[in-house]
Length: 432
Image 1 (cartoon, one colour):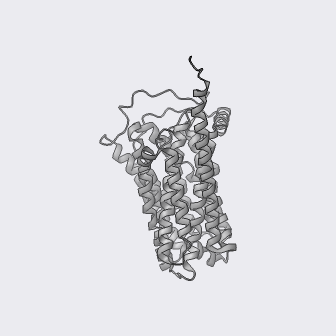
Image 2 (cartoon, helix red, strand yellow; image 1 turned 135 degrees about the horizontal axis):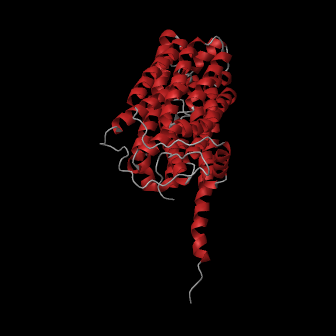
Image 3 (cartoon, helix red, strand yellow; image 1 turned 90 degrees about the horizontal axis):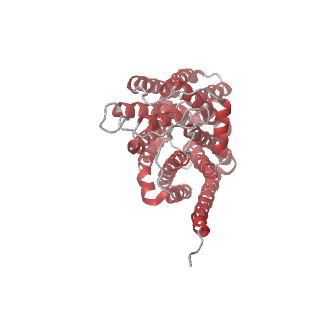
């Protein structure tokens, strides 16, 4: 397969949901042009806010469990509810962005999510905490697909890989900084203060985004047409390659969600017995994700899409096996490999979606986001249940099962592509 560009361009949800080809991109944003740096910084800030809020309770799960007398599986719903709500809402939110604009949708999403985030620390019970987190996840659903669409519309195609890489890097920085911040604040003042600190961080990022994001110049509003949207979604789900990419994204995120939901419980217990602040600092490993996601374009150019996926899945599996050791160094190295493999695999799969979908790319991207975050929700809950029943080995077994799924899908895709390449040659009559 040809190398895939990263990013999902969008199209208006109207009539047949098709777009007119763009032939002149000279007036789009590119490195060195006015507005490109502001756009990159604004979306980086949005990515930080999104992932800091979305996973704000993940590093705090042992403290949340202790506070409410909940099991790991019950406390994990404070993460799974947010990611699950995002997964369910990202498609309708992407449709709204077609009508009201990418910039407007991203701004509204951040404002609502940040406002809810300021109430989250005051949740009187675990049920209220889960409910507020679900609302927060639903609000954040307007940002991922809209951001990818905004970039595809406003940035020159040759600069799109780098622009998407910076946004994904902002995601990894947000996930890392939010967890580190909550870990140390929780150790000093408790988990409620930690969630308040994340809320204030998100407020600062939202302000930066509002004042830095350039006005959209290439967005054309469309009409909301549920029937056209349903046809577009149906056509994407009928595409075998897109279905495989959605499944790959979900399975990669199942591994990642399971590992990072449970790792805090493992590290606060024997033989490690680490304090909350140190456990939060473990998420510095996310810096590896920043590097590997930004390098995904070069990886695909060198190995091809499936070659890059094989490397990503092998790296993830090696990390899972290495993390079984009882030495902290082995666990940390395992997390490094898992994180590098996940972020590179996610970048390859998500970028391949926009390459594959020739029409309705906004909806194709939204479906990928839905699958991706459903995988996160399932991984968080199932990983916690596996940890409760089988310890860390149970969580690793779940991760390896998901990895096996990615390998099987990729092998099937390789075979299907080979058959497709041979079919036209077989149809050509032999000349005597």
